[in-house]
Image (cartoon, rainbow, N blue to C red; front, side, top):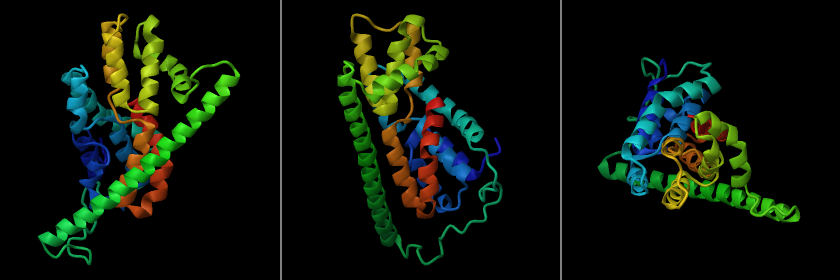
Length: 270
């Protein structure tokens, strides 16, 4: 697909080790990645799930083959969608012959195994701290917006006016084009809204509740929902991706923050 080596590694690894961690596989090159490469790295993370959460979703009644199929299909799909949204206009240094100094002999290179473990531990602490800070910030912002919307909704006699409710109706035509049966479109579109605002785990929990109720979804709507909900494309994950990538490439922090929302939307579309 004429992508760079760094992009290919990140996209291929995302369904197995998850967003953020996949970029750690090409850590020496993140600081010199182009804007389009960074956009793709984030998109591939948003469009897949990690192997670590696979068992959790299987325990909620989602067939493993559907989760794995959805994630693997998302590897080439995320590349296609990301490049349409953010085409490559530069020349990536990892496309073809790699000419980047990986720092193996530089001043920051570890002197021995103990030094390498120490550096890894410090880097892990920095990444965890940035993830926590960004995640709390975005979740707090969502809670503030929902609180304001609920207060406004009470003035118009609208109960529980939240981002999830609004986005659920916005996603109605999206769900229609996914092929969900007409009478179940709104229920599935609200699941998609829950995935985007909260996370896919909450959405799968809601799907399980619906399927265990007296009015479950049809088999077709159930399967479509399983595929549509499979991915890390949610507002909380934006904070995770910004935290991880900014820790690996501080000089790219501005572009990472600038393309994060676009990458999340592309990952959701994928």
